[in-house]
Image: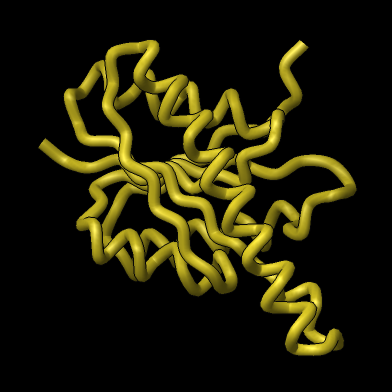
Amino acid sequence: MGLILCATRGGEASIPTQLKAIEMASQTGDELAFLYVADSSFLNMTAAAVVVDVEDELVNMGKFLLAMAAERAQKEGVMARSVIRTGVVREILPVVAKELEASVIILGRPAGESSQFKEADFDHFMNGIEAETQAKVIAFKETIPE
């Protein structure tokens, strides 16, 4: 039995990716963990006190979003744990994957103009995570459910 690690931003567009992770865990019997990374790096030119306050708020938001993801899993008969970290997802994801000994990492493939990744950059990111963690990385296109 392995562990599926589903990195999630937690927004509405992340729900289909979460549901795919839940479905996979249900089918395989693997453990499931949801990861939320509270990334306040966008505040790099802001006063330290503000960064700490915003980071605390991001962590609190992450707790709520992961509680919702875990509730979705529970409705499907899958128990899921929640992992919250602070930092930059590109750095934190492989660390957590190795800590938890994840066999599969599920990501949402960001789409649209709000995405930080260009398609080739995202593929490079996925390949790097796979090489670093030895886990299979699967990405699902993020879309807002209708």
